[in-house]
Image 1 (cartoon, rainbow, N blue to C red):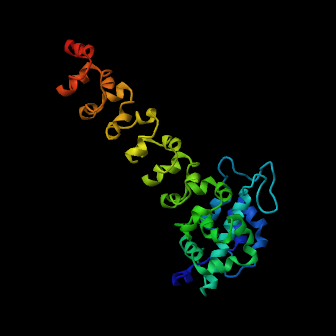
Image 2: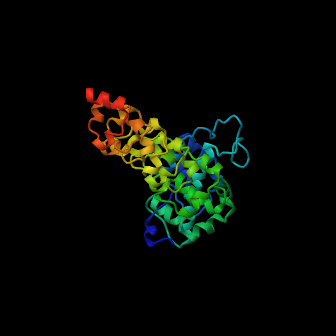
Image 3: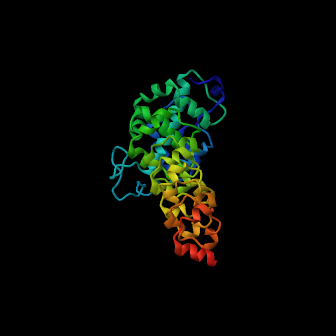
Length: 321
């Protein structure tokens, strides 16, 4: 439900947004204003919420469409490869603000004085009034862009950079075409807790700098090739059984304290220079063929019980040393 503080909040009419943006995205909003310019409880403002301004000019991730896609934009708001264009994403952001405003109006609140805040929009989109507003024909294109009306709140949460998903239980079910077409700049701005709620297949496509802030448990669920590209400080926080699956070349670059807690079969595959830095307590557990490769200075530190198991040729070199 919309709480009473929302009565003090003022929302933005999309025509006002287009004028304020002054960007290609703003022009796109103005061009499409006919779809939602007759909605109530919206008053023109000279300043648009920052999230709308950000949504307008951004580009989708590699492999998604842009306004200049060679395939052209289809009547349903997609381009030839099935993804949403940047212009339509900008228009959807404007419709998201309109749905939130409609929800506030349906709750019997009067908004005046300030632009609608992201927190207020999130609360409005989570309300039952938002579902009622989405039943209006004017928002049919928004529901189509999100994949279904039930996905609209979480879809809008990304487009408007809201503080959290209004319906987090549904975000993992967003259609692949919808997630793949999300502007990269907006996805990069999502807080780590929100990112962690997105599907694994989608997270696996994100650049390393987006993934580094995710909880260790979420990162551990990503494909090994993706984890391997993450910075060492991020990898060291993962469970040992996950690190043990990484390529030896990646493990070799990790801190000694991290390597020391890995299973011996994994440790035994490491290059000699890396092994030589490990604690004697760890080396003592390694197979004899592995120990035989170590420098004499390292072997001399091994317990006598371990040294006695070394080949005579190695022992003779150890004594000479």
